[in-house]
Image (cartoon, rainbow, N blue to C red; front, side, top):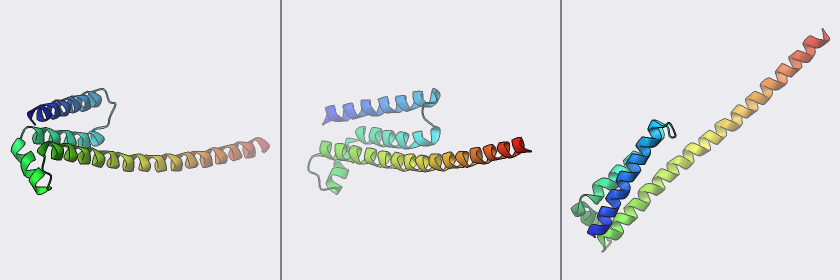
Length: 119
């Protein structure tokens, strides 16, 4: 179990560093990085406290604590991916609305230019 906890700690630290570097280089916005930080910190805290993992395994009726840790990590990242899917859907809708507004403005502009050219 200790090897899995050490591996999970390493993955958590790498994820935190990746998010920090991405924020610094402006590859990810701060409001989106909060979710990744939350997941990475939760995973880091769980991987550094084997007693908490054992208690969670007991509460979830999972006989093997490492399996409980992997299950919790999977659920955390599913929540992160769901949140990002919602954000992506909202951005797509906003992009479509913006493209429609630009098309309407271009139509009005060309109509105004034609009207001005006739006068």
